Length: 158
Image (cartoon, rainbow, N blue to C red; front, side, top):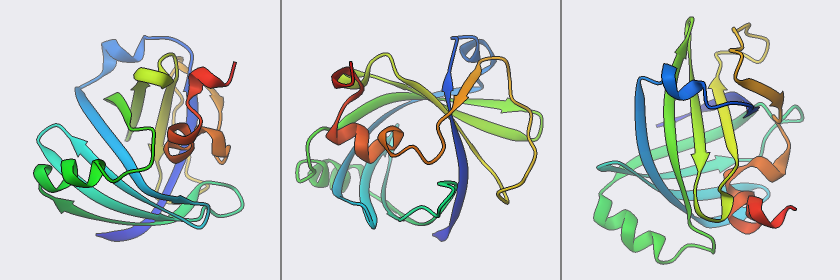
């Protein structure tokens, strides 16, 4: 499936989102390529797996090309063995707020302590309600991209 991904990212300032979450999934993902012009990601999410290619973000950091296809979990696990270090692990919570769904990622391992909320929009100027647990916006800040967290984990920032 191919489309333009339009999203904004925020740091999360409390665990209140967990009470509002409708779903929690465990995700393991690695990157076959983390070039600035494109990333190639392998992800196992529950009992499903995906191969995803993402292009370079636009100037605001909100929009980029994304192509994704479903693959078998066995294929994904084989591909993860070929990935660049570090393999990311996280819990993803789905939280509905008004007409939108926030995906809140609580990172594990070397990124423990980092919690990021993302919201996908239909266009860059789309309005949405920000819940009280959403903090500072980090859209377009490359260090918060999953591909960069694999290269320089959050616990190395301090």
